[in-house]
Image (cartoon, rainbow, N blue to C red; front, side, top):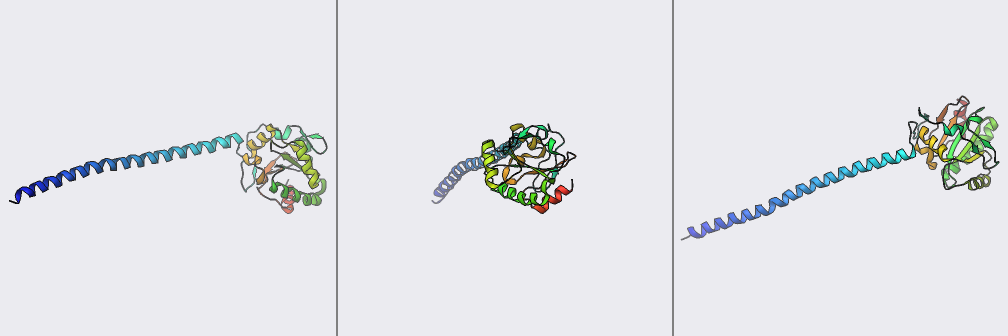
Length: 221
């Protein structure tokens, strides 16, 4: 008498198991598909991010001479516009070229009026020039396209800076970044070149540079 119900119970359990498997297996497959899709999405985003960084560096003209905390000479290929382009001293109206100043060492800094790191470095240059006199020429090039000659002149006069100040034309900024790295247009890194009378140009380390450090570097020309 108990055989019938037992067989029915077995069939019901088998049918229930089949229904459970049929429901769970698609869900497991869906999870696997979702995981694969998520991995693919992350990979695509990584590739896109890499491409964006490369494009940005290309727009800024990051060249072979790009530097961080170390020093470096210029890249092998450049149009040399930063050497030969005529610049105007915003304080005096005098025109000049970097190339035309090379009867002595030249320190060429790029900066922006709003940059506090730049201001600190320029205040250090007062002490530097008190120590070396006219034996070294300093040129400050404003690389912010939103700042004009009047703003740069007011900055120099307000702080008592009496060396050459000029607004960097676009081709000059591009030439500098192409030869010495994109951070030549990043004022807070306090970019600076030492240019010796023989024309050799070296990108000095980033960050604040003391009078002692600068005197040592110009003495190596």
